Amino acid sequence: MAALSLSRKKNASRNAAVERKNLITVCRFSVKTLIDRSCFETIDDSAPEFLNFASILEQILSHRLKGQLTWFGYESPRSFWDYIRVACSKVSHSCICSIENMENVSSSRAKGRAWIRVALMEKRLSEYITSALRDYKTTRRFYDDGAIVLGEEANMLAGMLLGLNAIDFSFCLKGEGLDGSYPAVIDYTPYLKFTQSSDSISSDEEELRTLGSSGSESSTPENIGPSFIMDENTWYNKCKRVEQKYRLALEQKGYLEELVRLREGQLSDSVTQNKLLLQRIKDTELNHKLEKEQLEYIIVELQDQLKSFHRFGHLSADASLSQISFDPGHSQDGSAKHDSSRLSGGKEDTPSLLGLCGSLTSVASYKSLTSLKSSECLASPTTEMTSPGLTPS
Image (cartoon, rainbow, N blue to C red; front, top):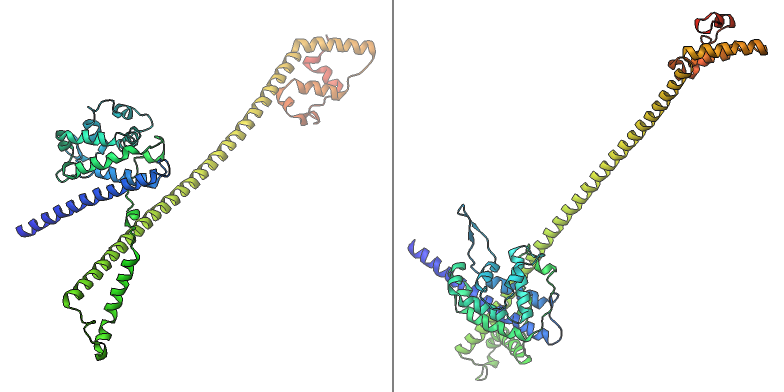
């Protein structure tokens, strides 16, 4: 068991060393591509070379970064900006305070990405990294053993970044590149391209042709001669070179297949999120439609209630006016005057007029207009004259 644990530790340390070396190598390639690109155009957020460089630098500064311990003993993730903010606080005329006070940048990762862009525009990225690495106490406090910033690769990193001072960068600090919600992904595809001369291609083809036809040619006795007899070392070297090239092509094929699988996974996640967003939009539209129908129904009900209220108020006002105009005192005076006018003029009141006057004296008969046509509201002249309210004085 002890030997197994020791071998595991050796494998882990070897893998960590390979990871550090690969990151530094890829960073050197990215700096070279940036310098080559700057000879033709200005570098901004739209340049894929810069996006790849920013992702590489972010992973280098985040390599084996310690988490932050909470009050409950849990370790929460931390961004490299927390280290840069403390380690570069003593740099004169630094941009740390201005980035810390930016309103449109809230997360720690977004502030770190903004710092990379501002430092490149100031042509002081190498100075910031060098100053941070000199503060070994702070660096040791933020990083675990085996980190790039704690090894010999850190000095190489500061020297590589010095060549970026010759490039004029132009960035906008309000774009999607500052969004701290997505991780930094390195694209290794541009660094897999390699050129091969025609001489090496012809030599490879010749080696493959020789290896393929060696068995058939050696079996014929007429082809055996001093010019075709090769020693064992030459055959071994040729086979070794072909095997190395085959392994290299196989590794590149495996990487490209892994990259395709990664892109397919990202595409499937995007399709799933798109479906969820479309379903959420449909549900929202349906809820808005139901709320609109409910509001329209409530408005119609309120309009009906308002119309009935106005009608009831109008009828109440008319009923009060009818009661005031047809009270007993007024009716007696009116009947006396009417009798005197009838006596003087010789005109008679018709039964329908008397029935109308009788129906207006009550609110219930006033509300129903059909009572005006009924025979109950019509009275004869003899009954009208004998009624108490219409008795002549």
